[in-house]
Length: 173
Image (cartoon, rainbow, N blue to C red; front, side):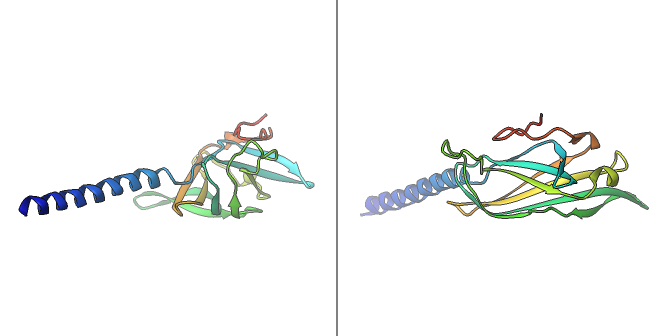
């Protein structure tokens, strides 16, 4: 009788452990994957200067509730060193309910997003100690897990007059 009870307990524990490990492995892979370009493209659009940021959904599924924030950081001095003072950069589009995954049938590359601002970044970026941080937050369609991605533009040299290549590429030409 005691051997049967020990076998039952071991079987239950091993089943729970195997299920837990499988779920952690499976769900661990069900997180959004977003890649952000290292370039900011300065283009005349609709008669005014615009600065474009680009990111691509590399997830094997759709992502939802995608929020994007751009922040300009400038160091300010205090008694013990420097702190960063952040100022929001207003984006023309900063919330997307749904971004599809990449599929061969997607001729319009809807999984690739370009965001723009009309804020004059060249004029605002006056020194080499300032930087811009682009933050993208998205939720995986199957697991519901959120993930935060960010790209820091540490130099004004990342601003280019070249335009982004269409599709998965994050390069400019």
